[in-house]
Length: 233
Image (tube, rainbow, N blue to C red; front, side, top):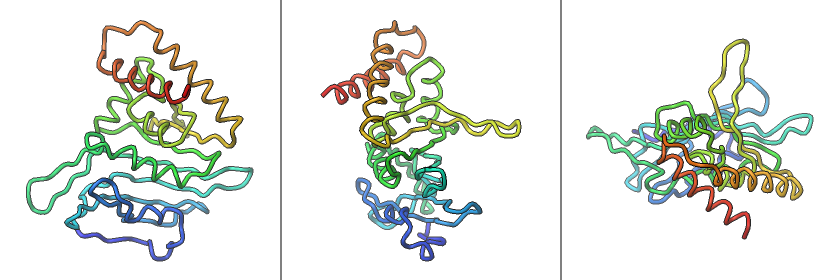
């Protein structure tokens, strides 16, 4: 796939431009689309991976909207669809890269999170067909705290102290179900949210695991212990 940027030159100074060329393991991020949307301050964007040989992934790893904020104290925010599988196809059988298996997903989310200021938030849909979407949905369905679902932990470790399940119903049509993650605006709220999460995770670890979905439970418990260790350090 040929690397072709769309609308980037006209928005060269935009914060999203900082993602262009970032290293992700042996790959680089390519901001293949950055366009102004109808609402003021909103930008649509798309990220692909590029291999060290210069091949661009046929599928995007992120598609979304970024807003620099607005009136009434609204801080910057991001609303994205994330895909952990990047497909490379150069006329040969498709070569699929799994960002989770290659441990590249956390670095990607850290790059994205840097663009969102304190007090801002990021929304990530979990309604898709990648493993991370399926397992996040299943985890929430059995009462696993959002911050220790497969998608939620990426948000938490990238700097969002509050992670919750969320969806918006508009005009009788429900929007995609998402995780909503917030950055604390100051140390007071960071302490409040950390205290809240410690309580949630402690309660989760103290409950008796259900007989179903044991692999999801066990993975979530491992994530919970790691986060608690970090919070209590």
